[in-house]
Length: 384
Image (cartoon, rainbow, N blue to C red; front, side, top):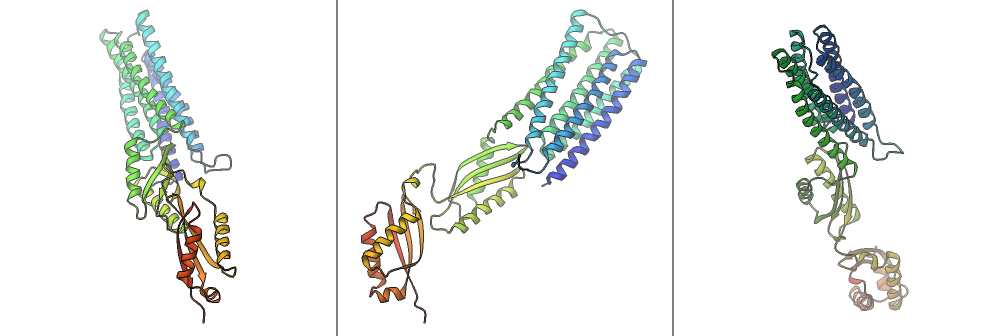
C-alpha cells in the first residue's frame, strides 16, 4: 500500500506529464491553425492551453489533500481532493455546454469554416492520438492511486481528445464539402462530456455528505470481522469515504467475561485483518461490547461499581464487619451483574467462616437485589 507521500509524488508526476503535453499541443495547434487557415484548430489549441490551468489546480489540490492532520483538521485534508473533483466535474459540464452552444450556433447560423490545409488535418490527428494516450496513462494512475481527482483530470484530458476528433472531422468534412459535419458531431461529443462531468460531480457530492459504502462491500467487511477469533458479532457498522479512502466505525461484541485488555486486543486484531484484506481502508474506530447494544438498552438501568461495592459492603458487614475483599470483578451479562469476589483466607478463618458458608449467606443477601446475577467466590491462600 502506497504512503500518502508516495501517492502525492506519483500523482504530481502524472499531472506534470499531462501539463507538458497540453502546452506542446496547444502551441502547435495555434501556430499550425493560423498558417493553415483553420479557425477550429486555433480554438482547439486555446482549449489545450486552458487545460494547463486545470492541471495546476489539480497539483495544488493534491498538495493540500495530502497534508498531515493538524489541530484544525484532525481527520486530515483528504476532502480537498473530493472538493477538487466536484470543481473539475463542474468544469467538464461547463466545457460541454460551451461546445454544444458554439456548435448549435454554427448550425443555426450556417456560418461554416473556410477550407483549411492538410497540415491542420495532420496536427488534429496527432492531438487525438496524444490526448488519448495521456487519458489512458492518467486514468490508470488514478485507479492505481484510488484518486477520484486524478481520474477526473484524466477524463478532462479526454475532452480535449474529443475536441480534436471534432476538429479532425470538421476539417476533413470541410475539405470534402460537408462543412456542417463538425458542428453536429461536436453537439454529440458535448453530451458525452457533460455526462462524464455529472457522474464525477455526483460521486464526489455523495462522498462530501458521508454516503455509506455499497452494501456488498459492507457485507464483505462484516464477513472479514466475523472471521477474527474472539468476535461474537459486529453491529452499528458505519462507513464513509474521504479522498478515496474508507473510514469505518463499528461495535464489536466479545464474550462478557473477557478482560478489558483482551477485548481491546481482539479489536486491534480486527483492524489488522481489515487493513490487510482491503487496501482502501484508512481508519477504523471500534467500540468493544459484551452485548448487542443495538437491541438491549438495559445498561443505563444497572448500578455502577460504586453502588455495587456499597451493596456488597453492607451484605458483608451484616455477616461479619471484619470481612474484607482483595479484589472484585464485575461482569454485566444479560441485564444482570455477575460478581467475582476474592476473599482473604486468613480473614475467613478469623471470622470462623468457611468459603461455602460465606457463599451461601452472600447469595441469600444479594438475591434480594434486582441487578444481581451470580456470585463466584474465590478464597485467597493464606501465606506461610
